[in-house]
Length: 428
Ligand code: PMP
Image (cartoon, rainbow, N blue to C red):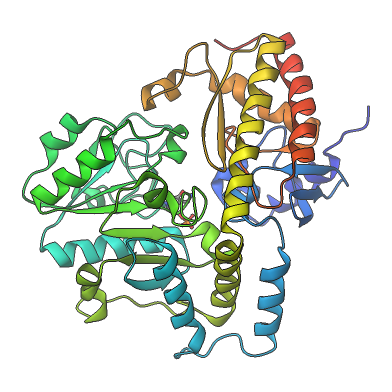
């Protein structure tokens, strides 16, 4: 039988000879049967080096909210390419993009830019410490805020509070307290007077698309106010995805600082920290050093202005469609599981779908750890065989480029994949 993935396997063999581990980010290494090597992407589709076409729900781990190579972003970048790649100096578009963020993100009054989410998290924490004169940061178990030493503990998939990786300076995260999420009493117990900020994913997408319980975010907002600590929403995933104004707009709770990345750039690497004028005064006054060679470079800025402008102009239509497609995709996965007698349960918010193999609902982080991850990974591998590309741990993102027909085709593919996996037996 012909090997569908022969080209990807050959690429891995070659890449491993020079590229450490054969992948450029460790998350890609877990893809089965082999990390797929892609050749091109357009809209909701990707094509790999073997010529296989996929409906893509990985969306480059989230940034491609407008699909692959969206026309408006490509045009804006092409125009900018001919005009200048970077000046290391002021240009009009950086203020234009900051204005667009202040218009769309409800709690934003001032903005600073970076290139990646990890970097923006770092900047936000620095601003919070400077603004409060305090040191401790509370983060939550199973929430991800990038790979830097000072925050990379209690990461998704782990249950401990140890450093997330070999080589990490254990002292760098000494001033981080890891707390259980969705548990006001647990937070109250650690909200001492040395806490500068509480940082969270307002919807814990990285932990399993877990949503805040009714009233939880409001309580955290109130508790942080009373404790004199800042509230930081890491909206690297949820920003522009849950709604134009992100999770804070969709859920109606305003943080002091917000971190944006991924979808902001329409596929280009740009991130931002934004917040109230008062808190951001630390950066505005230059008391906090916020620097970076590529900050707000004209190429990424042009891409982000194009992306945000598109989302503003198409807000009503785009988010309504995203919500409807999310519902349809969720139903497709449920039906596939039910038909195959594979216990698939799905966590979801607008534009995000996370299936689990679990006989009971997955409502908290402990449930995600208890779910049958091995069978889920076999399901995502089986989806690849039927032309559906998802993040190996099952996470699926929708974009403005997906259509009802894409989701219908995915439903048919998921049904086949679920039957195949069920016939091989589960790992529970
Ligand atoms: N915060 C969150 C919530 C994220 O999901 C990520 C990346 N997945 C980051 C921060 C780090 O972003 P980056 O990979 O761009 O450094």
